[in-house]
Image 1 (cartoon, rainbow, N blue to C red):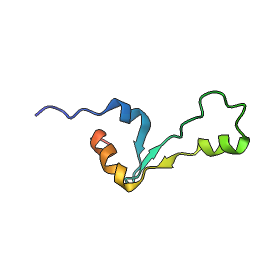
Image 2 (image 1 turned 180 degrees about the horizontal axis):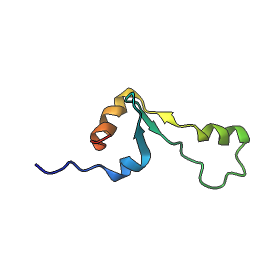
Image 3 (image 1 turned 120 degrees about the horizontal axis):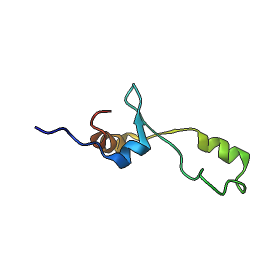
Image 4 (image 1 turned 120 degrees about the vertical axis):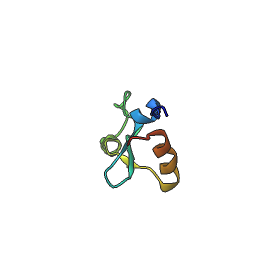
Length: 65
């Protein structure tokens, strides 16, 4: 049986932590940051946790994570 392929789009966007939670980076922090407040930019630095209903979909796309 051949190897399972990782979905590369998902691999670039999500990481699975040791306890099985799926982490992702925030959007809207690449350019045009001068009009954003410092508080908003600081909050965008943090990673988010995926809700339980979407975790199953992402783990199917990342078979070796």
